[in-house]
Length: 86
Image 1 (cartoon, rainbow, N blue to C red):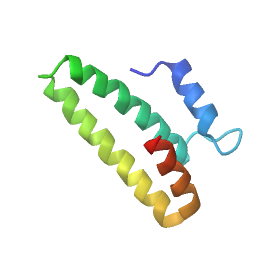
Image 2 (image 1 turned 90 degrees about the horizontal axis):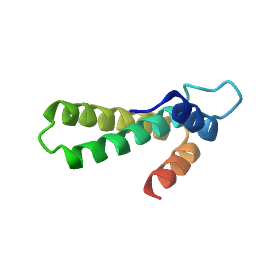
Image 3 (image 1 turned 120 degrees about the horizontal axis):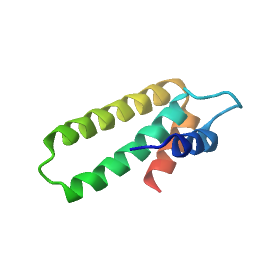
């Protein structure tokens, strides 16, 4: 689970301007961190199907944000996809 401090640090690293909290870049970064943490949880608790369902929903949500970014701004999409692959 993301603490408030961790979430604020993620927002600061990915925001486009000082008050940005909802841009696709920020939302993708937050979802990616939550996905990583939940994937670690599922490695330990293999039969936790309720959390697995949440993970699948988060991955789909992140994919939709990436699709939106690809349609609207190709350069921003390219930088985000590089971040995810690294």
